[in-house]
Image (cartoon, rainbow, N blue to C red; front, side, top):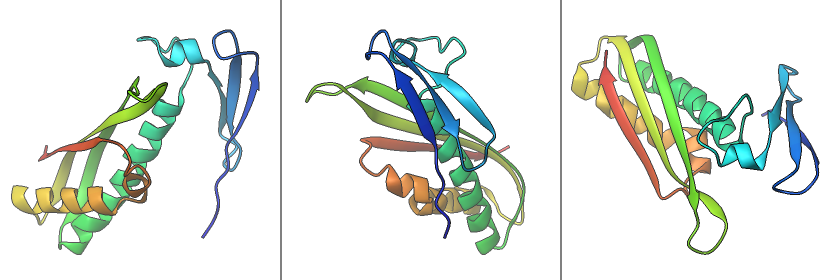
Length: 146
């Protein structure tokens, strides 16, 4: 299986520094990062590790759910997946990701609401990114047919 790579170039200290993360495997772009904007309510045109994790989780989950729906005999017509990743103070010091909320709305043929919910839960358990994030306190799921 392939290895994917991203690279970050950083200058300065935590509070006054900034960087740029490059998605080197795909070459699709470079994105600005900064700690003050990472912890602010408004991202102001920068990304953050949490947003990148949200992108990874939502896309991985969509793929896993598509597979689970097919395994259950259904056909996914469309899946709209959002991942909300929350950065919070860590009681041990510093910060940590303490919660992720996955929200999915799907248009699916061949499965009823219960079948879709079962596929959604199986996808959450089987998604490689969900597994990688197992140390997060809470990964919740809100799944429903559209």
